[in-house]
Each structure stands twice: as structure tokens, then as C-alpha cells.
Amino acid sequence: MRDQHIRGRVSLAQLLKQRSGGAERDEMSDHTAPLECEPWKCPRPSTNQGEAFPFVTLSVEVWLHSWQGNSERYLTLWAHCIDESFSFHNQVLATQKLVWNGENDLEALEAQVKAMTAEWGGFRSNFIVLGVEGKSRIGIDPATSEKAAEATGNCAHPNSTTFLEREDSASPEEVHASEAGQVSGGFPFVPCFFSSVQGCIEELMAHPVIHKTLRQFQDYLSELFLPPPQSKGSLHFHAHKFLKSLPKEEQTRLTSWAHRQPAWKNLYPLLSTLVKHKSLISDILKEIKGEFSPKESGSDCSNTSAALQSLRSEWKVLEDLCLVLKPLDVACQTLAKETFPRLSLIKPILTGLLSRHLVARPGDSSSILKEVKRMMRRRLTSCYSSPAVNRVLSVACSLDPQFRELGFMEDKEQAATFNWLKSDAVRITKENSSKKQIKMDDRVKRSSSPESLESDNDIRRSKRLKECPPINFREIVGEESDPGEPEESEDPDPCFQPGLSGMEFLLGDLFCSGAKSRNSSVEESVEMEISVFRADKGSSLGMEPLQWWRTKAVQFPLLASVARVYLAAPAVAGNAAQDFVQDGTMNRRRSNIPPESLDTMLFLHHNRISVTDGGPAAASDRG
Image (cartoon, rainbow, N blue to C red; front, side, top):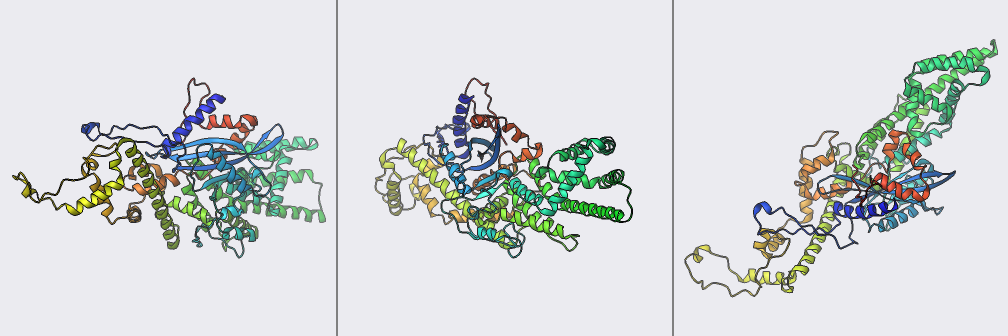
């Protein structure tokens, strides 16, 4: 198994370089070959092991591993990339025990991630998606960390996820974090959406009134399903009567709550089940109280009336909680159903939650409902309040064909978003051009004489263009000699250079001169693409972005490079989406793995590498 792990790491490193564009792929095209043979290419393996990976996005999952009574925090590093054909690839790179320094865990986490990526030759990541399991969140929560508040400009408005109700919602620490300057040498951690929602719901469950109400209903269910011996017979009859009227899934939810507190992701399904059967449950509770209470009169009747009033108040709290939790559950279910939950979905979801579903309304029937909405808004807003994180979310959203019109943003933020998109497109285009030029220079050095260097060509080309008069084809026809013919050229005879197309061979350095004389700069080209991109007919909700870009990459080549960066990023880290659907199955399986085997087994499992293969196993695609 360890040998297979080593072979898999080598194969994956090579595969990532090819997919991300980091590998040097010298494509030699023979323009003298027949037309039908022109597509033939000869890839050359990379010899530059230190080259950067421009199209790889990283995500980090921090989780709690329990082994033989000991609990330790681990992190799993994932790499996500989109290849030239806009196919998605998702691989686990490594799993390590999390470094803990007791003070600033986020900085320690960043240093550890950089060290882990260095083992793979280094990745250039503009941002990292960070998911933290609830119980291991202490000290590395991006919601309240100054590290998450790197400033790249702010464009806040009431409809934006960067909007903070600072006068009544944000704590002083969160306001300080959102206004903090950029930390040199760092990169923003984009919170995993499921981790953010988990933090919201766990904070909600700790609210004194809500905690008391949930505990009271847990006691009701415990009394019904786990009765004391003296009343077991009668309560068993009521429990059987109650469960008989419920579907099996709902039975499981309620009986499990009698034994333990519900997990954050099970809270809404559980409460919605209780509210759905409110009438039946209330009748059963009244019957139980009537059977096991002595005959009451006078003051005892008033006590009973107070108990019923308290029960009605408790039901009201549950109903208000369902109203608040439903949109969060819908958001999580929507992401979990996606084949690949993309980062571009976070901004629209957050905007809908903050501007529609979690807004206090005049018709809110109780103060607890208003307080809960305010609490959830504050928490969600603080998770994504960093200007750097907002920029990442906005650009990712603009490249998703479903949301590229950015209709849910105000005009000011739309303009800022497309300016950020232009900046990223220009930067990536220049980096790609620089890399291509370096590769071309390497080819020239390997395959041509020193006289053909570009610097010499530029001098000769300028001299020749000045001295050579325009060619008059009429004068040439029928004449053996031309008195106006220029002197013999000092330039060497044109020679074939690998990698040139037919037109490039014929025009030679004159083609470069024409290209340089054009007024269109990289910035202007990007602006033109963005204009056409914004004017292009939008797609409907549910459109697969990679499918759209697969057909549009030729039309928008510069924006396509940026799309590969941002659309490769997930909205959730690691197995958060699967764990949400499967109710913690992955966590339980990981707890059965010894610490010394975690890295090997998780690498082989998530990359689908079989340990029974005789030869080296290549990391398979996940997407």
C-alpha cells in the first residue's frame, strides 16, 4: 500500500502539471507536412520541476480524528483544476496532523499549507477554500480572524455580502477584522460554506432561550421513548401510537434525539418533523401529563394552566426556528446536490439569505425571531466580510454563465467586479505570454544558430524595412533585373524553426513587426472580450458552467484562462457536501484509520487508486 502511495504521488504530480499548464509541452508542428497531417503534435516531457502551476486551486479541510480515546486535529489538502478542454479534476494531495501553536492558528495553518505544497513543487494559489469541522474550529475561524481581512478594496452596499450592520450587529472584533490592512505575503482563506452555516447553527443552539427549549423537547422525547420502569407500560402504548403514524425516516430522527443532542445539519429536519406533527405530539403530551399527575383543584389547576401556556411558548420558539433554518437548509441541500459545488454559487446564495430570508420584518411575531435573524445575519456576514474574500466570490460569480449579468448586485459593485475581472485577465494573460516567450527562447537556443537571436533580428528587420522600397509586381514581370533592387541582404537565409506555423515561416520577423505595430494592447483586448461577454445571451439557472465555457473558450480565450482558475474552486472543502448528505459517514470511517496510515489511505481512497494493481496507478479524475 505504501509503494502504491509513492507511485500514485509521482503520477499525480505529473498529471497536475499537464492539466494545469505547468508542464512544458513543446508542440512541434511541421508546416511542410500534408494538410491532413498538420494536427500531429509531439509532446515533450517537462524538465523544469520548479515551474509554477497557474491553474490549480487549493482547498483545506480541517477535521477531528478520534483514535483510541485521543482526539487530534488533522488537515487534508486538495487540489482542483480545469484542463484545456474544460474538464474538472479533483485530487487529494496529502493529510497531516495540524500544527498547533496555541495563539494564531490561522498563520500556522498557512505556513503548514505552504510547506505541504512545496513538497509537490509549489503551487501559486490566489486563495484557499478553508473548511473547519465545528469542534476543531477554535483558533482558526476565518470569521473572526484578522488574517481573513486582507484588504484589496471594498465596495459594500446593502445587497452585498460585504455589508455589515456595524451599528447593531457586528462585534468590535469583527469590525476591526473587516477594516484590517493586508497581511504581507498572505492569501485570503475563503470559508467553506458548510463550515459557515455550521458555525451559525451551533451559535444558535447555544442561545439561552433556544438551548432551554431544545432541552425541554429532548426531555419530552426521552420520557416517551425511554420511560422509567414504573410507567413503562402506559408510555410504551403512547410511543407506539405516535411512531405508527410517522414515516420511518421521521421515526429515526425523533428517537435519536431522545438519546443525544442533534447535529447542526439535523436540526432543521428534526424541528420541521416536530412542527409538522405538532397537534398529535401535543395531544400525547397532554394525555401523559393527565395520567401521571394527581387530581388537581384550586391552585393545582393554575399550575396546569401555566404548564400548558409554557408548552405553547415552546412550540412558538420551534416554529420561529423553522422559519429561520429553512432557507439555510435549502442552501445546503442545493450545494450538496451539485455534482461539483462551485465557489461561484456562494455570492448569490449569501445575497439571497441576507437580503430576503434573514431580514427582520414588521410581521415577525416574536422578539426571539427577530433576535435569531439578527444573530444569523451577523455571523454569516462576518464569515465573508473580508474585502479580499468578497473579491474572490464576485469574480467567480461573474464568470459563471448563470450569474454573469450580476443582476443581484448594485451598479457600483458590478463595475468593481468587472474591473477585478479585467485586472485578473490582464495579469494571467501577461504571465502566459511571458511563459510562452520563455519556451520559444528555449526552443531557439536548442535548435537554431546564434545569428537568429531575436535581438539581432529586430535590428536587421528595422534596417531592411527602411531601405527596401515597396515591391511593384508590374515592374518585376518580364524584367531580368531591376535597377532599383536593393543591395544584397546581410541577413542569413531563412531557416526552419520548430514550433512555427506555415504563415509564421513565410513572414518571419515581419509578422512580429506587424503584431507590434497594432494599437490593441492586452488591456484593450481584455476589455473587448468583457464587452462581448457581457452582451452575449445569458444562460438559465442550472446551466453547467464548464459545458458553456467548453463551447465559448474559442470566442473568449483570455477570459477562459481566468475561468479555469475561479471555476475550479469549490464552495465547500473536502467531503463536506457528501458528509452533509450521508450524515457523518466519512468522519466515522476516518476514525477507524490509525494515525500513521491516514495520509496513505485517504490519498488512495479519494484518488481512487487501487492497491491491487500490479503497476503504477495514475490518479484518477474526480468531478
